[in-house]
Length: 86
Image (cartoon, helix red, strand yellow):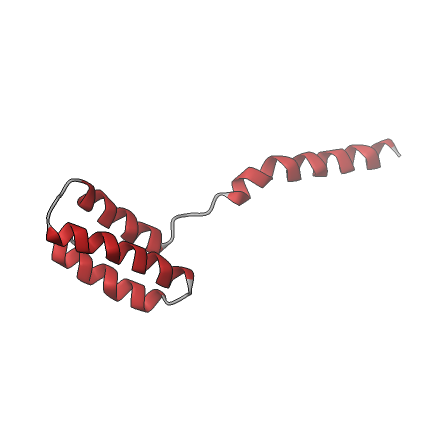
């Protein structure tokens, strides 16, 4: 009986300790594109950066809807406009 209680306690502890590690997800490609564009736009104040700000919202919306290919196309066009290497 003592072994069973120890085993259950150990498994519960492992599950409790591993929960934060499983909750953290790596950045998706969409997040990386948005971050790259936002970093560049944050330091500029021209028409290209204003257009890029609106494109970032569109990219995020497309990614959320699962249209990653369309989002990638827009992100690469926006980065090219800003002079960022994709």
